[in-house]
View (tube, rainbow, N blue to C red):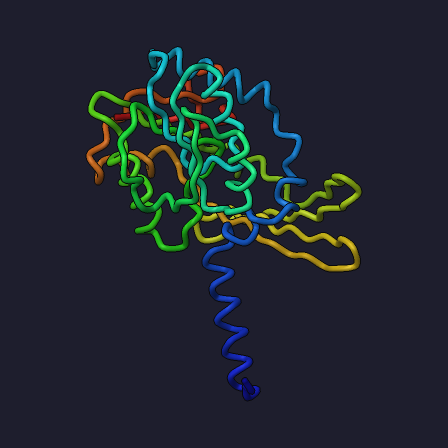
Length: 258
């Protein structure tokens, strides 16, 4: 098939628009995403899960949806604690990796969070700032709405988000992180209500560039989403030890609701 220059330019523009709209689809599915963030603390994550299930008083065998589960580190640990866990994520490579841990009470599938899973759970966990990726505001809202539809009567939803108040106040404009011999040149900005992280690096003679774009959702904005959806906010915590939230000092914004 032969394309004219105009056709080629149109295709390039369409590809760029699609990539920008779904930055998370391409970036999360690369090995470089996992290289950059390989030092995430498993001990801290596991302590958080223990604190959370104890606080929620989830009985052994309760069903949990790990929404945007990545490679499944939270899912696997929750399953080891005795829970029936389903992990879903949009990144096919991450799900392919996670499926090696599958058993009778642990399963994984690709899924977009802006649509509800066709099943209900005793608890739905959305962890490590895995919301607010969509450019379309309604898709961000639909993600919250979907969580509500996925919770059993008497069940709980949990969103673990960054505390944007503190993040913006202490934003590091630029830095270089070297991981596995790769120098990741990182630039951070706040634009139009989003926190942007530009990531540039070279590997094997090739230039790479990705942008993470997350909506800077405050507690007040989450409350607005919840009001529209009919969600009841039960508790708000500021760290993985489930201590009181303070918008100036807390590292996290953890919301418990039903």
